[in-house]
Length: 288
Image (cartoon, rainbow, N blue to C red; front, top):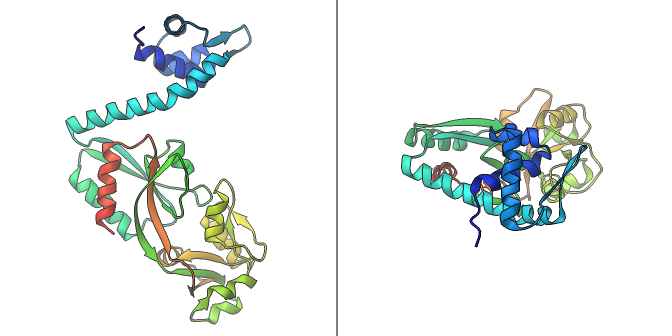
């Protein structure tokens, strides 16, 4: 059986992503001629053409497309395994990028502080995740893990510790009839436009945070939503800590009975679980 070289596989993946020999070489820090050589060696080992190259463009052959589809998840798993072994050997080091949606509340900050105390050689970065794209930053590798509002039903993401169950409030303008109420029941919201997130947030996620009813605007950020609330364009459901953090004089937050609690969960890519992510998950779970 021919022995496959990791560098050849890395070259093929880079070339499949870039569809340009020069850019693939820059990505791998090798010359364009070295990319061509590695590709030829790989094609010889496999016994078929994987890439078609003309004066105008580079594209994968049907065999190359099939090979890429099977190779990429296996390569990601192999890379993660090597990273995990390396981290275990030298302790948790490097950088952990943590995304959060809504508000980085006391529990999340407590988990970060605990993780940082136990792993001082690992630097943590905290990044806000867009309201309208709760899973994109994790999926695209902009963060290693994120704390997002549930529900999560994404086949390529792993749901870790679930925490911070909070009662929901509805944000309304100070001029809204609900503004003077001490509490509301969920059934009373069916006659009120509820502002929701726009795509790419999945439809099931948007529905969970703005049940269907009277048509209302869709927004990308919480600040956009609260601005529309203040302008009396609709109401917006928020958990209590987020409501308190984003408090403003022209908006009132009224507790709502009869709705499921707002819940946060930690997510990461299916093949992106590293020792850093596992250790942070333990810190999050300890804060529940």
